[in-house]
Image 1: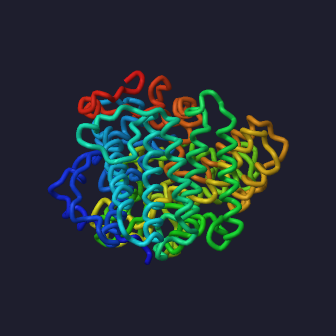
Image 2: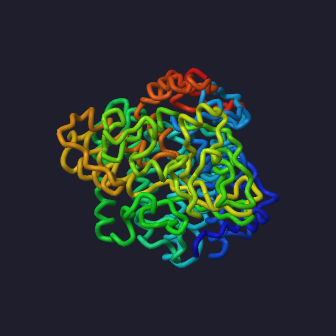
Image 3: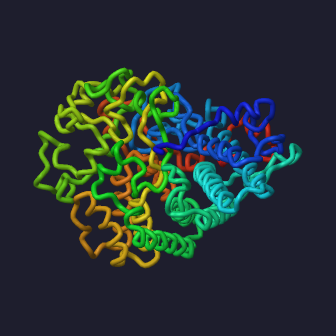
Length: 541
């Protein structure tokens, strides 16, 4: 079975008269007659998975939807469409509690959390087989944890709700970030203890033990980072390293099921979806289902000769020059130092990952054997920009898309967590604890070797190794929706986003802007605060 089948229509119809799916489901709306059979729990769990997906145009509607819109807020894309809120406003720093759609992530996240709480509550009193209940609990706790991780990473302190509430209890105040992280780790530990290396019922896309362990590494790494660890508690870095070590040991014992793929490109091909490097992804499918991702139209090139029955890209974005230029040459040297660099072909002979991340005019070979031509470029930044930066994002864009009639019809899954990320987080944590030890070099060099780059030269300082890890994450995990969260957790977002001068050369507007006094956290929507007076606003909004 390639995909999890999201049979949500049955669930929605069962509760069409209740508040369970229409409002933030923190209350104890009636579920009489449901949650009786294994089929009921299957449907409920599928609904919880479905909360992770995008739901249509503009990247809205899913806890882990948005796709490439998250890189509109990083140093990946410039973006033109002012009506694609709130991403457009975040890109320029002009965000407020009344910005349209600023509440979407909060609302959908608490709907998902409320549904997870309902499943766990009903599971406790069910008389289903223990083995089945363990699987449902493990997957549910993971999905609750990954939802809270998105919330705490975005807003900071958030209400922590881990049970069904009566209607008179739903005005919950914010809980400290530390308490939220403790709950996330607890959920993931339980999830890992309930799940196996093989997905339940052999359904690809289902959460596994390694997914829970990997998400724990990410949560601990975030919690140890400067944005969340103002006291610089070294024990948090140790916990992150230990969690990564446990997963690396599990991978060594199950190398056919967990680990790096042989090639970087092989991680992202349609034929290899749900491969052993992918610890967890949001599953998408095309063919008229409206269950696809929505990257193609806002961010893709013009319609390619390998595509048919799809609209041309909208030309709403432009690759940030500094991001593209930062990639090393294939000899591991900077462009300014490498003999491989040519001003006539500035994007030839780059880090091999560059060509999986971007379509490059006159270089990229399409699936039909043709060459990606400059006429396929589609950027609002204009001809001069396209000549200087003949690039279009390639990752998660289906160059063989067929007969897609909806905005959310892209087939490629969105990878949220993969094994290369674990190795880089291990190297980061090890460096923060002990400096650049051999173990730290070994971990990052595994990632570079797979990419075809030479090893990092030994002898770096702790600060230099930290910068090396940060760059390696930028190139290895480019346009996977992580860069925005990385530059914020390292507290370098203001440095990164306020120092991109090359866009002004081409009159790209709006320019990137990040106000450190407030933009490290999203505002809580004013409508949300008005409805729940116990909530307080983030600073300077």
